[in-house]
Image 1 (tube, rainbow, N blue to C red):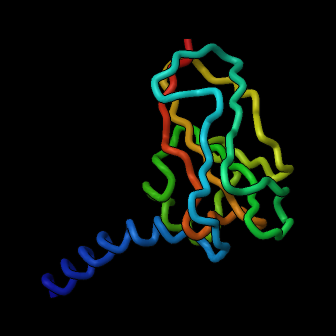
Image 2 (cartoon, one colour; image 1 turned 90 degrees about the vertical axis):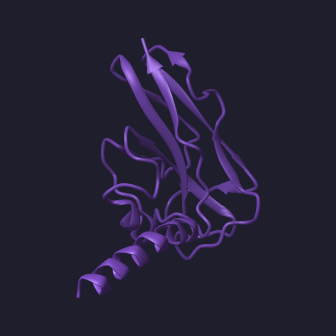
Length: 149
């Protein structure tokens, strides 16, 4: 019994990266990318901070609009990298929640001004389809860390 449980656990761990690469059902074109247009990993900034979203190989459409090769932005603030952590699998399959750590831009916005407390903060962009579900393969930025003075 222990061996079967251990093998099952190993199989789930091994499948995790595959699921994280698949995302939802809406396809994304090869080479599509999302990025921070005005921030880099390690930047020191002041608050309020304007964050500008960049997108290559796709277009922006509001949530609820189903149009090929489009999506809308989500900004992950101070949470594990997308697809990881306690809620990673659910985010990939069922969509991103809306809370203080998951900011939705379903109106098609391409920037936001944030009030952040002094200290280190992580940021990551993820593009969602009409229903807030990441594309297959997910279009996401690297997670960056910034310091607010």
